[in-house]
Image (cartoon, rainbow, N blue to C red; front, side, top):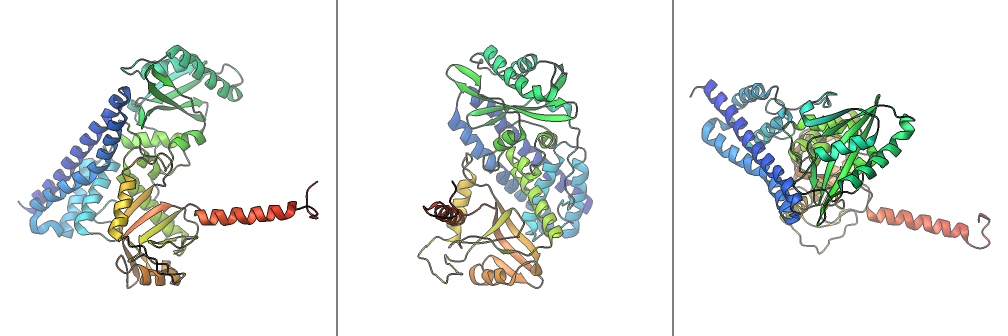
Length: 457
């Protein structure tokens, strides 16, 4: 084959494997409704684990295909630039273009072992993602000219039918309608017309199914989420959530992803962003199971923050851990965790008797990432070959890197290359919270002692 044919076949091969991945992803997701109706919770957990591992399987298959196809040209940079351009033309106009771009990035970075960002060989945008206000109408149903929630709730519940009947659908319609009417009254003060847009797809997670949409009153947008449970007596409505804070909690980063069918992920993300405007785009993708796309968005957000903030990386606040070197940017809401070469406490000059190896640490993180977090465990993003300029690191943290993590952090010229790290949402460490509570309790006790001049009457 000549170079042009090689480019076309490589781009087509990547797109074909992406289509296979998406079809298998959707097939697993499609089983969620069947599992919910039959209360097959163990099967649902197996599906979640299978879907999590699917991406790496398809990427490995694609790597083998490309190495056979391209042969010695597998590392040819000019050829890969042409493949990227051809692939971009292939996916232009697709509803899943964003996910396809991430799939291309994954194989490109795997083959070229890219450090940092190479804009010639991967899709990268420093500018924030623009979420369109309009989205495909096929993903939702509209309920126009509503004046009372009874008719609205009847339509919503009856349009989201299951093979298992509702336990008492008339009761649930009445109860949910009362809650909606009560909530809307301060906004309407009359039987004013409103409309609703409800997603056709149901969101499944663990033992709960969620109907999600939004209520529109003029320019006011209100989220609506209806959790459904299945029992021996049938399906029943557990509650109706009508505030962004309540819905945001259900979409929290500490929970596992939903199983939700869609052929247009970006449209679905756009809709959810309209009812959760303060939520990062990366977290919305993660919540839908598109964790690699969420990781891409997160990586773009990180680079924008580093580019705009001009802050230096410093040691994260809190007590030093024996296994991880943890650092952050002063105003960044996440921390970076790099496995130490050996368990030790550098700042206290104390050698621990822990014997855990870096491979064991990675195994434990993988175990946690593939299990249901049920709101208790902070989500973690795993990254390889992160590179920033040396001048962005404090002298203290560079010295800590030299002493504790020479195997995975390399300083070369003007750059620091991190072979492997975890990025996790910043939380206040328990010892810091304990110290804070102890200090405040002692202070309060002192003020309240008998005879204290400041004691309140």
